Image (cartoon, rainbow, N blue to C red; front, side, top):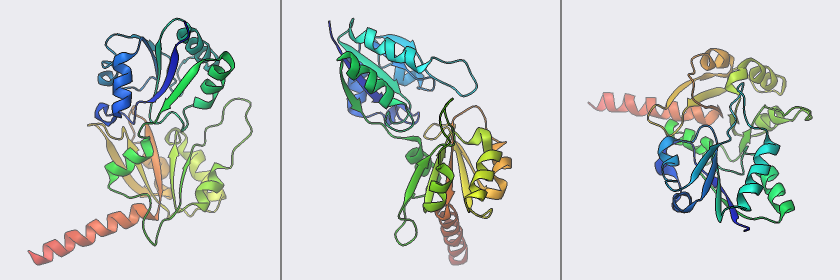
Length: 251
């Protein structure tokens, strides 16, 4: 048998943010290899499938990528529908290209099903548009994390050049993130917001400036965190404050 592998985006957390296609495939799947942070209610949609946890969490023991690649190929040779369920969107910081390359080498058919990435869910929770007419026309999605043996990236310069940036997997190393951004020319007064567990009922956010990043990051819990950085964060806060003042005066 040669089945088909679907690289499916599980979204930022909330099960009802799944696409219709993702939900349908989970219901049809024979086996699901899933990331660590996928919501239990999302996994429950794969009621007839064998479910295998292959996720990665920073600082914890996790499956090697080459092992995941092999599991996908082996599963496709035994099952008709294989779902590789990834947090957020598979094509953004999800190492999807490595899995796609392994499937192509093995001659396995595949399809990518997009999902809502954490940056968009964080913006929704904050009520902050990442782009704003006349103020923010560029957005960068970056991560400071670099794999073992990989060359350093220019993520901080990318952030400095963008109007708005969302930093993935950076809250756990807030001191390094702030230092790199300062070296790249980002001012300590740049507005930032940290959003934890975006889209979920327990989502929480804190706001401040780059100078306060370490203190803000220290308040985080166990959920995944993204950092939103840019003038749009302050602009949205100022607009709400002005509206509240106008309402108070009118009353």
